[in-house]
Structures are given as structure tokens and as C-alpha cells.
Amino acid sequence: MAFSKYCFILSMIMALLFSSAEMSLAARHLLDTPAAPPPASTLPPIPSLPKATLPPLPFVPSLPKATLPPLPSMPLPTLPTQTTLPKPTLPPLPTNPLPTQPTLPKSTLPPLPSTQLPTLPTMPTVPKAALPPLPTIPLPTIPTTIPSNIPTTIPTIPFLSPPPSN
Image (cartoon, rainbow, N blue to C red):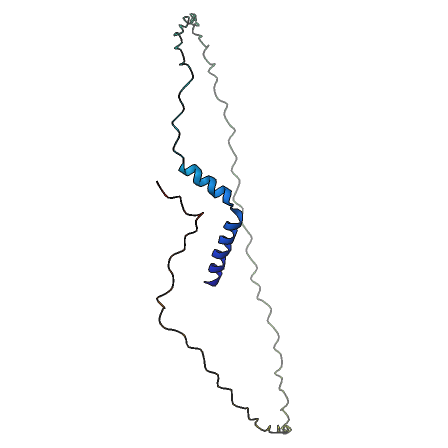
């Protein structure tokens, strides 16, 4: 909200800086003048030109039809027949039994030692620190109603408003 307010104020300042009194007065003066009548045509009319007649096209003789000799009727060559090869057969796979894995002896782990773990030292107790109470600062109150005296119209600026109509 505040950012848009500052942008609006900045744009108004820029408009004031880039405009000048002479420009706004010249624009107002141009708007106050009556519209000029359209200029009268001072050019002579274009004369109509005579219609040009074209000479007839020359006669083109027709060419005689060419007759082509018939194609020679030669028999198509015959392709040699393809010899059929015997179907290949694969040799049977050997049925040797797979080698067996040797069995490993079972190993036993030695029992864990039953020694007692050392006791950890105890942590010393820290005394509780008492904090001072927080100061009581009253919180600001947030208004719940919208005030009715907020301006809703933008004030007019003389050089940005259109000139009065006569």
C-alpha cells in the first residue's frame, strides 16, 4: 500500500518536472481554436484516356501429330532357380552333471566374555537460574472499524484535466 502511494507521488512529481507552462498553454490554445475547413481541391481533373485497341494475335500453325514406332516385343529373361539348402541341425547339448560344491565344516564362535561394563560417572546437577520477570508493555490496539473520512477521489491537477468546453 505504501509502495503504491510513493509510486503515485513520484509519477506526479515526474509529470510536473517534464511538463512546462508553455506546453500546456499551447495545447489549450490548440483545443480552443475552431476546426479548419478541408482544403479546396486546386488540382485539375485527370482527363480520360482513349481506349487502346490491340492488334490481333498472329496465327500459329498446328504441328503434325508424331507417330511413335511400336516397342519391340522381347521376351523377359528367366531367372535361374534358387537351389534349396538343407536345414542345419544343432548337435545335442552334453548331459554331464554339474560339479557339486564341497561342503564346508560348521564353525562355532567362542562365547562372549561376561565381564561387567564400567559405570559411567554421574553428571553434576546445575542449579536452576531464576529469570527476572518481563516488563509489562501495553500492546498497541488495532482498530476494527474503518474510518469514514478517507478521501476516495484524486484531486484534479489543472494541466492534466481537459479544457472546459465552450
